[in-house]
Image (cartoon, rainbow, N blue to C red; front, side):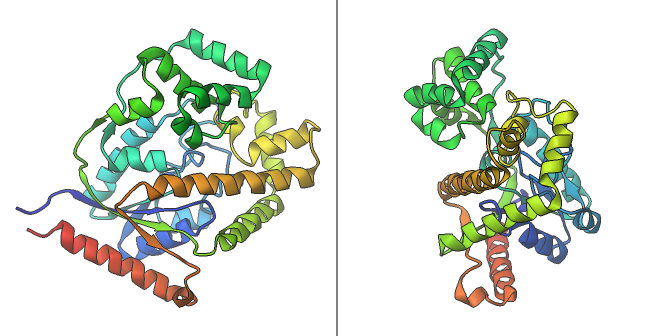
Length: 324
């Protein structure tokens, strides 16, 4: 019997690893459209700090799930999965290849693994209590509360992402289970996709860090400070929002408040981004279906070899997926 699942290609990896460039090339080679799997690129106005694809790239290749909500709006992995599934169906129905690209592992998994997170009703009073605790005692103190009861979940959530930390504590409060247990018990339906997942990493970690530092420098040169000030003046970037705790924005807010120099803010962004890249890689390495590519492999000095290997992996995967 022939496998009728929708074929998709996913390009994952840590920030600044070259995902967007590879995904763009694959879109051209496989008649594809790009579906972003980035939890920050969904926000309008947060362009420079989230390294959104350029307007030129978006004009050349259709991009989906970018600029879909304002920075003060609530958004979840479940909401993303629903929108991404609709986008994949639309792209596939038009005879094109859905190509997912992004570094938010939870978003990618929520789509490809057919996870149903359930409809747990929030507890606004308890949530407000947690946010007030963070405001009074600091984000780290709230994160420490999560670490005490669910160290595995705490390890995947940055202390400054107060909203996600509070949600993890809220899940425990409402269900009696840790977030880690809740996720493991989430309903996993059979995936409707035949997914080939490519992930980028670097043999020499310093090469990745150099790319991260260069990207941060380029963001500052492109006007990141002005972008943060404009969002702040528009009433966005509240400390209690996901956007307000985003890397690059949070540190510059500290500079604007006079808590650090601009150079210190830049160094803080680079450090936070390196730590985030480690967490991204840790998440991806749990997935046995990931095919790894290393751009700093000696044979990839000519970019053509990297593309050729990506094509070979995709071709092998396609043959196996559609074997009778």
